[in-house]
Image (cartoon, rainbow, N blue to C red; front, side, top):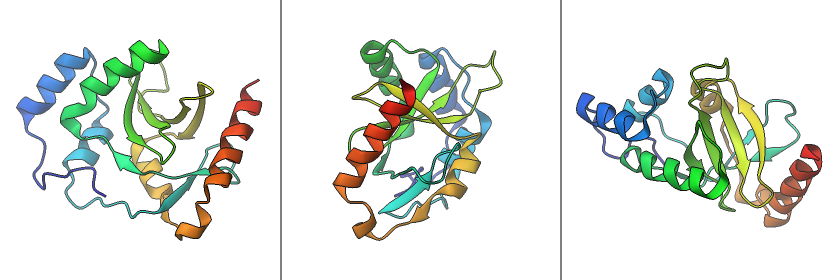
Length: 159
């Protein structure tokens, strides 16, 4: 799966329109990832969390660039969390989000958001760091029971 499904760099107009609809500036690395037509993420895949490599997740889909404002609005309405932009999903419907909080040192950091337990776990310091962490994974490693166990571990870690 690709960040950029159009095989053309993002236009300046599309970037400006998207940032205007969001009311936020987008991290340069995120714009680069969506503009780069060569970034391809194999599925199935896995990545480790920042604080431990024992807990892993998987990306099932990348949200198209022109749909980011809609997903930002829905995420805020559903979860009442500002400054986090969903850009990818896992197989369970959980979200991979990027911080848009320019006032904090977290701007551009990547998080896993568990939509059921409403927990947030840091994955990477930047989008490039996150992309580097993603590795191909045999389908057998992504057993749904493992994903359920991951969610339980993350929810216990937050309480």
